[in-house]
Amino acid sequence: MAGNTFGNSFTITTFGESHGKAIGVIIDGCPPNVEIETEFIQEELDKRKPGQSKITTQRKESDTCQILSGVFEGKTTGTPIAILIPNEDQRSKDYSHIQDKYRPSHADYTYQEKYGIRDYRGGGRSSARETAARVAAGAIAKLFLKQHGIEIFAHVSGVGNIDLPEVNYENIPLLYEQREKNIVRCVDEKSADTLISLINTTRKNGDTIGGRIATVIKNVPVGLGEPVFDKLHADLGKAMLSINAVQGFEYGSGFEGTRKKGSENNDIFEKNNEGKITTKTNYSGGIQGGISNGMDIFFKTAFKPVATIMRDQESVDKYGNKTKVTGRGRHDPCVVPRAVIIVEAMAALVLTDHYLRYLSYKK
Image 1 (tube, helix red, strand yellow):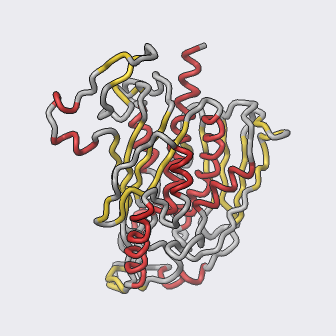
Image 2 (image 1 turned 180 degrees about the horizontal axis):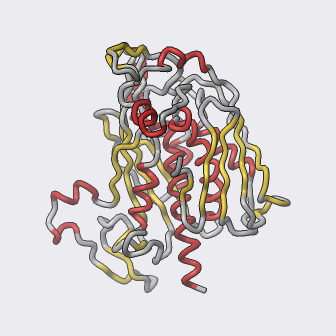
C-alpha cells in the first residue's frame, strides 16, 4: 500500500490502524534547534480527539503522544522524529456486522477490490483516526513556522445551509480565544448555539450533516511555491483533499470569482507607506502563479456529511447479495468541529515544506 508519505523537504509518514495497538508518524527533514513544546503538541491533539463534546463521537481516546526520537533537551536534533499515539478505546465488535458488507459512501468496496483484503474494524487505515498522527506532525510544523512569524488560523464558517458572517482576521490570538469558547469552533458567538442545535437535531434523527472550514495564513513571505507542478495552492489543495470527508477546496475568490470579469477580479499592485509592494484587494488568496505574494493566504475546505448514519441503508455484500447496513458504533454527526485542527495541521505541513525549499533558494 503506497501513499503513506506526504511532503518533499519536510516529510511525514503515518502508520497504524483505527483498531490496532497504536497510530503514529515519522517526521523527516525537520531542521535542528526547533524548540519543542510538548504541552502544545498535546493541546493540538486534544482539539482533535474524540469524545470532547456532545456533538462529537463518544469514543474515548486520550490521544496521549509519546515522542520516541529526534528531540533532545527540548529541541529537535535534525534526525527523524517518531511520535506514537496508543489506541485505548477500540470496540471492534461494533463492526462485526459489516465484516462482509459494503457501507454506502465508505471505502469498504474500493479498498477490498484494490487490495483483496480490508480491516473492517472502524475502517482500518482509511479511518479518520489516522489524522491524529497528522495533527501531531502538524504541531511540530507549527512550532517551526512560529519561529518565522507565520500564523495559521482555521474556524468553522458554515454547517449545512447556515453560513456564518465574514471574519476580520487582523487579531489572530483573539480569534483563537473566541473559537475555543464554543464546542462547534466558530468565532461568531451568536451563531454557535444555532449550529450546535442543528448538529444535535441531526444526530437525534440518526443522520449526519456537512460543513465548511475557512483558513487564513498570515505573515507568509513572498516566494513560497513553484510555478508549475508544485504550485503552493496545488499542494494546499492536495493536503486538504487528503483529509477524510473533504469534497471541495477553493482559495481566494474561488468559485465566486468565476462570476466576475477580469477587471473585477484582478488584484491591483501598489506600494504601501512602508515601501512594500502589496495589492489593493486579495482575490488571489495570497498566491499568484503558484507562488505566495506576501498577502494573507486564504482558502476554504468543504466537508461532506459523515458517511455512517444511524439508520438502515440498502447495500450489497462482497458476494453481490442485497443486504441492509445498520449504523452502529460511535461516529461524528458533523465532522467540522474536530476537523478545524486537522486543516490547520495540513496547512502547516505544506507551509513548512515550502518554507524549507524557499530557504534553500536564499542561501
